[in-house]
Image (cartoon, rainbow, N blue to C red; front, side, top):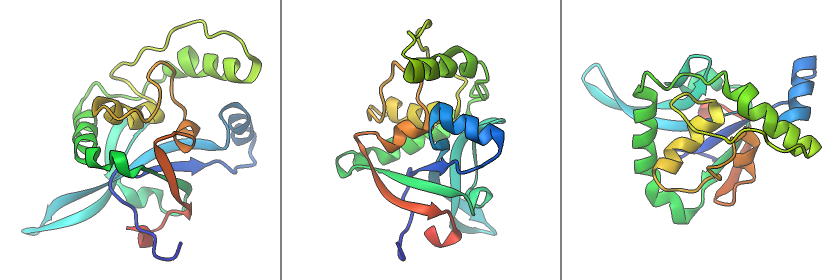
Length: 188
């Protein structure tokens, strides 16, 4: 799309095309989508002026954070946008995302991987029953961090009873794919 522009709380899902062993295994386990973050344009004061700056909201190794979108330029992504009937909730979702990124308890949830993601993969791939019930907490992996502000705003982007994975956003019934390609400054 030549004139494509990101909109607030668009979800950007990284596409995993790596050929290294870790990428191949991850693609088999969780599919072609490896990470998710959201576009968050914020107004910031710069030398006495108020300017809109392109930020992203995500959970990574440092936990739930807001940082410059330019850190992700050049990455292949699929852009998912809330359907029109949910767009009126964007301000509430943004406010919840900012609260989460401001919460020192919102660290990266490394234990979610063996406790919830691995059992989900075994269930999805091999039909094995999930042994533990998924429980949300203040710590979050990337897909939880993107779903949580929506859940708090009462926007049912994904089911609450199963740990979300990045690819779940691509098949969500309330998100539309609006673009895919290499993330660039031209999109903001």
